[in-house]
Image 1 (cartoon, rainbow, N blue to C red):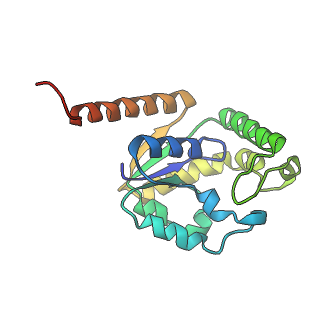
Image 2: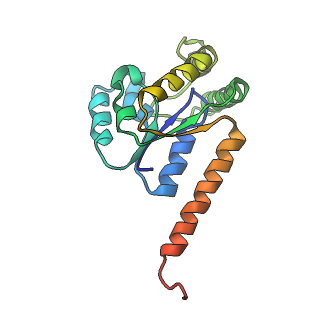
Length: 186
C-alpha cells in the first residue's frame, strides 16, 4: 500500500482511518477538506492543483471526496482502496455526534471555519448528506471499483471489521519492523 484512497460516506471514518494509516505506514496524509475549504467555507482556487501535485507522488493517503472537482485522478493513481461501507445507523450516529461536538465546542476545522448548529439546515450539511446519499454513495463506489480493476480493494462493512483489519495491519507492520530491526539474535 503506497497510494491509499479511503472511501465512504460522511461519518464513516475516512479521515480517522487515513490519519491512522499515515502514522502506521509512514505515508504522507493529505486531507482533502483542508485543501478544499478556504476561509468562509469558500473553495480554495488551488484545490485542484494541490490534489494533482500530491497525486503524482509515490506515497500518500487521502479521502475519496470531491470527485466532481478532481474527477478520476485519485482513483487512477491509487493502488489501494479502503472502503468503509458501514451501515446507515452507524454512519448517522457518528456524523450526528461529530457535528454536535463541533458545533457545541466551536472547534476550528479548516482555515478558520467552524461548524454551527445553524449549518445543520444547509442541504449539503454532512448529516443531511449522509442520510440522503448513503445508498447512492454505496452503489457509486461499487461501480467505480469495476472501472478501476488495478485497485486492491479492502471493503469493511462494520466498525468492528474496520477495527479488526487495522489491528491485523498493526501486527503485520510490527512484525516487519521486528524482523528488520538491528540486534536480532541468531
